[in-house]
Length: 459
Image 1 (cartoon, rainbow, N blue to C red):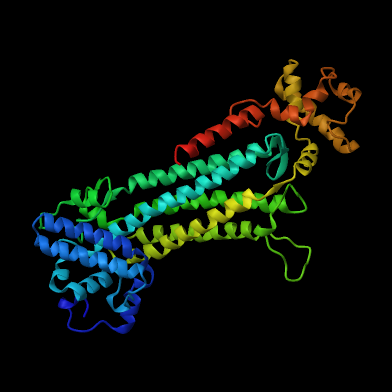
Image 2 (image 1 turned 135 degrees about the vertical axis):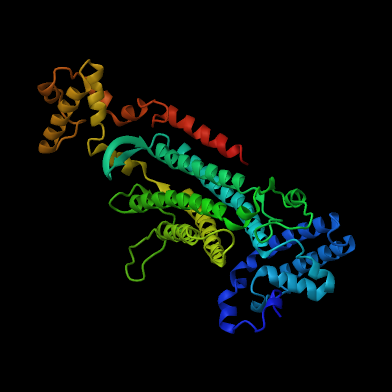
């Protein structure tokens, strides 16, 4: 018999039972559900709402059920619909009448809300730790490549000189913000909905502050209707994870390009690439491609929750059962992507010679040539026009700015002198960009130190 069967004269149709059941996916919340129930039972006994000895009997029964579940000795039933009803049914079977008192002053609405919050609150530190490990990898790669000059791109066209270390720090700063977004999300969800009931709390003298403390929350939620009717903390997490996956996907795309023969800036370790069933020469960046592909899966979870919630009147609606599969899948996906991605980057071989060769083409020191003229007193717009003419001449002649003769330079502007060649050398172009945040070695070393401090503060 269903735990809520009193109002009904007929058994639930099998099709409805299967359609309504969530045990197939919410079973993973068993530990959070039992933890929440123990806190609730303890509070009921302390408040005198149920006899203290029955409170202790309930707690001991729940602890035994938890041990049996983790030992693989419990099989959940679809007849009991969800994890909450499964555990309550097991408890009542084991300890009898006392088990029926557990649900006093509680609804499945606040029960599922606290379970899901507990789950998300526990998973965020796992996610943060994985991002921080990726940050450590980026720091190692940056330190090893402070002088590895490469082209920086805009519109996928060679634009200005930078270094591989500077590139790594660009992504390190993106992931740093991802960490702070996850931290902000955890801070905002750190309120306990237990005791909110179905929507209007309870006539019993529940101590919501006690249960919040027992479950490790900062405080109880302030409004009982809001407690059970919103999932903004889950949406916020999925938003943060979507942004994180977007950063991973962009980085994955870079690696896919860099490992191609068209770029050949990097080589993937054999352990983090795959071959072809027909083309023996192939070495495919499958890890990077899968991360790029799985990004859409996490985006889909965010859209699922946003769409699910957008038309729901207060308070709880059954639509909200659809939050868990999407939420769990997104967390699982990100937690699977981060370690393998970090390992792939850590084992990546950087090819400084190929990057330097690419940097030598494409006139990526053109802006530096214009800056050279502005230091000689020429307004930037005039300098820009002069360098544009130089580039046009080089395109026609097959030269680069580095290989032009001084005579050719002076034919366009008398301001050019022998020192132009030193000014246009790529290492000069990079290391003169000492502006805070720039690619000069001393600047990148500061960026590395900031990321190291950020990671160390969270370790």
